[in-house]
Image (cartoon, rainbow, N blue to C red; front, side, top):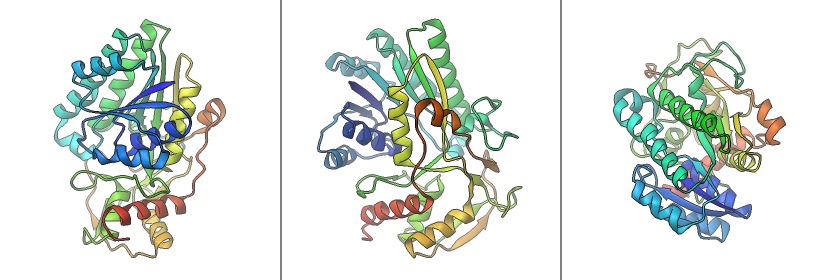
Length: 332
């Protein structure tokens, strides 16, 4: 089975591509390298002993998509290609709507032209917005509170309507929570462009001496220690969830991928310090626009229907993140 992975040199995409190859799938990657590096494809090959086909380009480029689909007999698509920063989406909404939503439309048109009707979509728990449900199940109200979440919900709507118009499509929407960690080899991990928008890469850059301290953005939330609470999941567990979704894709499926447990920012800092022995200096800072106080998953549907569950511990998430960061930033 040959799988096209859009955004396949990005953080989650690269780990999924590696897991696909190790599970016997053929992989074709397309990525515009807006938040990744071309060398990631080589590192995936080093991990797996197999070379993915790799195209540098954008899913908005329909001529490139035609080339990919005509050169390869694609059986299914796993769609990661999207901009993903909540703060950046709030300051530049037009860019996010164009890249994320228009890019998905472009991809779907190409899939339609080549009669490829199997897609697993990388969505986000931000589609839920502020939910009174703790943990959050798939039937919670959908009400995003930031532009990034709005784009993910629009992309979900496009794919859901596509399925409803033609039930031959198999559409799986994976709403996942906060991926951290890295491959145990230390060869691939999260390398954000510019100032990290996510917690763990910021922590690792502080640990590596690239930044003086961690800004804890918001210490007055209605949470046990005042800092934001999230469901952190190891990226390899997440990648394996995509394979389970691909193997169990039937009609329209919607699943949360998470651990079912929330950790605060301060808890993550303590866990990182304990796992690595590196002290992380912290400074309190104001809340970021669009951020939520607390959310964590009810992953029971994915556990039952897909036969998937998160297995890696918070200690492993922190240790693997630091192993990759030390190698990448030359601190090994």
